[in-house]
Amino acid sequence: MKGFLKGIWHPVIDMSKCRNCGFCYEFCPKGVFVKSNAGVEVKNHSECVDGCHGCEWKCPSNAISFPEPITREYVVKVVRWSKDKGRAYPDAFVNYAIKNNIITEEDLKDEALGKS
Ligand code: SF4
Ligand code: SF4
Image 1 (tube, rainbow, N blue to C red):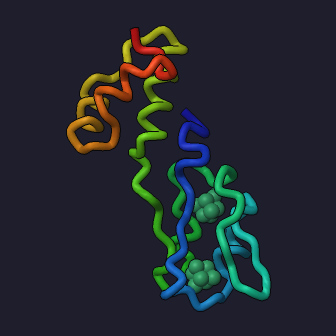
Image 2: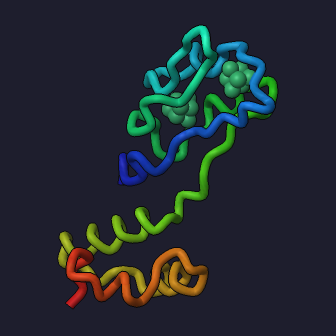
């Protein structure tokens, strides 16, 4: 499912570790980073490639990490995708999300999620 984490999967820079070398900016082929006098920052989050860690591995300061992708937004995306494909959504996954307070049972009753 290429692009399934679009806008969800992206690097985060720990500015307390970043020494502004620009390696991440130079390395990323997708233009996710911008560089200015103020330093390097993540700007084009949606351009990041699902599961890519390239810039993290290039960073000499261990300043780049990736947020936990299993967010409420991600769970909603999985449920909607399943619904759109006419498939049952993966119960084990959704139950995991409920158990870990990522999403609530009430959220799943939300009409916007399309659960009937
Ligand atoms: S993870 Fe890959 S695509 Fe995403 S910003 Fe880093 S190098 Fe670019
Ligand atoms: S590679 Fe690491 S240290 Fe260099 S600018 Fe990017 S985040 Fe900062």
